[in-house]
Image (tube, rainbow, N blue to C red; front, side, top):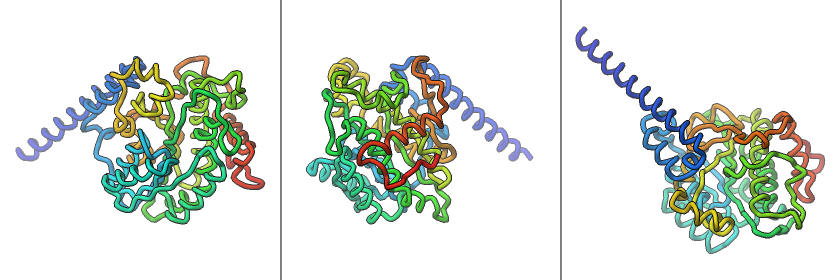
Amino acid sequence: MVQRRQYEGRDLAERAAALGRRTAWLLVDEVLEASVVGSFSAPGIRWRRRLGAGTPAFGRLPSQVGRTVLVTGATSGIGLEVARGLAALGAHVHLVGRDPAKAAAAEAAVRAAGDPEAVVHLADLADPEAVRALADEVAAGAGVLDAVIHAAGNLLPTRTVGPGGAEATVAVHLLAPFLLTELLRPALAGAASRPSGDRARVVLVTSGGLYTQAFDVRGLDLAPEDYRGALAYARAKRAQLVLTWALASALGPLGVTAHAVHPGWVDTPGLRSGLPGFARLLRPWLRRPEEGAEGIVWVATAPEPARCSGRLWLDHRARPAHRLPWTWVPARRSSQARALLAWCAAQPGWSPGPGWTSAI
C-alpha cells in the first residue's frame, strides 16, 4: 500500500511538472507571437524549443524508415536542411533542384545524413513541361509518396517570365506546386491507402510576407510597370496559403493532409539576394537554415499534423491566417480556394489535363 501511494505520488508530481512546462511554453509562445519580431526570429525557435522540451510538440519524432518523400528546392538553404532532416529520420528522399553542381553536392549531403540511396531530379519549376516530366520521373521511381514538400522559392528584383510564359514568382510558388501535386495525386493516395493507415502529407513552405497582403487572384500577375519583387513574393505567399486550403479539401478524401509552414526569418542565399537590406538589418536575429527546417520536418512527420489539415504552422504550433485587418477578405475559404484553382488551371500550359476540374 505504501509503495502504491509512493508510485501515485510520483505520477502526480510528474504530471504536474509536465503541465507546468506546457503552461510556461504556451505563455512564452503567446508573448513571442504577439511581438512578431520575437516570434519570427532566431530567439523565437530557441526559446520555444528550450521551454517546450518534454512537451508533445517538441518530443522525439517518429522513425521515417520505409517512407518516401519528395523535396523541391532541396539543393540549398531550408530545402536542403529539410531533406537532410528527413534522411536522418530514415526516410528515402527524392530531391529536386535546377543546378547540376548544387544538386550533386546536395545528394552527397543527404546521403551522408542517412539516406544512402537519395535520388536527385533536375527540373526548372517555372517550366510546366519540366514539371510534367518531373512528375512522371518521380512516380516511376518512387511508386508511392508519403510526403511532398514544396520548398522551392524565388524573390526576383525584376519581372521575369519563365520558360512556360508565366511570371516566374507565380510559376515557382503557385503554379508548380499546384500542377506537381495534382500529377502526383495517385502516388500520394497510394501511400495513404497502405495498411499502416499513415496519412500522406503535402507541405508548402510559405513566409511571413503573406501577412502583409490580402488574397486577390487579379493581383497575382503584376504588370511590368507595377512589378516589385517583394510585393510579387508576398502576394504569391498569401496565395500559397489559399492553395493549401484547396489541397486540404481536394486531397482529404484520399487520406492526404495539406499544410503550410512558415519557417521564420531564415538566413538563406535567397534572402540575401532577394532582400539584401532586410538581411543586413536583421542578420543577428536571423535563424540558421536548420532552424527554419525544423518546423517543416515536424509538420511532415509528427502525429499532430496528421490529425488535421489546411493549417498554417510556425514552430510546431498552428497560427492564424491573418494578422492585419486589411488583409482579411469576406469570401469564404472554399470560394477563395476554388477561384485560385480555376486561375491556376487557366494559365497556359499549367492545366493538369483536358477537361480538368477541381474536386472542391
